[in-house]
Length: 353
Image (cartoon, rainbow, N blue to C red; front, top):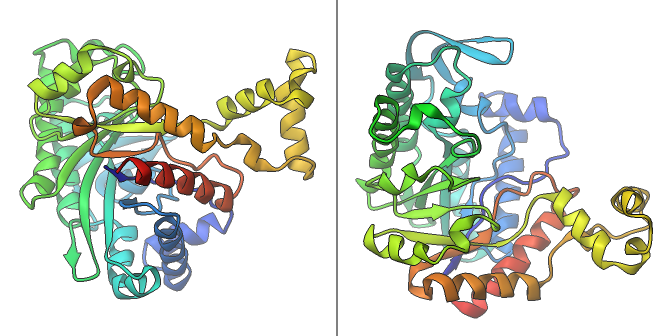
């Protein structure tokens, strides 16, 4: 079992400068941020570290596709969709500086490359259709293909398609065996082919597993879901994994800072004794004034370990090749707190691995 993260981290620098850097301007600023953040993840103990996803997870792909025009927060397709750059800027930077990273961490690194999937991206298209979904898949395939790298200092171990919108609301288009469900299955397999054809593992990150279509994605190796998702409680999970030849990434700590604040307020006497409606607000106020350490929000290694043990009991250690936070850490107040949380996760996984 190896520790892995989902991607995002808190960023308190110049966001516009960061975006310009991704486009080839302000390159020194962009490269320094990406390399420093990536080294920080590895030094926190991660076995497989996702590139630092500091930009908007949808805009960083949609804004790089020719054939789209942005209209009030949505996108209109005026022509076939083609990537302006066949790769991901953050991944390119990390491999450009791979020797430097290797020398800092004193070992070859293993990377998880994430890209936002065709289901989620198509939700931003005005009056999307099946052909546009397949067009998106072709563009994402080219981006993914250009992001699979390997050299003496590091390699891409996993390609993850992120579909946070799938299953969150009921989607009648995804009735079983309909044209939309078939289109999305074809789209996911198309993108995954960029990885599987090179021996790289394929995973899908979900915020809900209520829609079961992901089980039918042929090239999908690893399923990622949120810590409280039914997949981590249902007795049938193990049978499905083994019958369909898939594995589960164990989500071993909660990353929603609002839920973490509610937990901390409930279990800390100086807040739990307050009226319920004031507890969380007082906790946040104390953190912002420096009267409370923000690490109070983090789950303990004991909690993280207990959640991992529960998942192992449910599906078996042999079905869990990876474990880590349920989602990204963008909502955390500081980079130091986020990296400390990654360290707690990686320390727990190391004891099981």
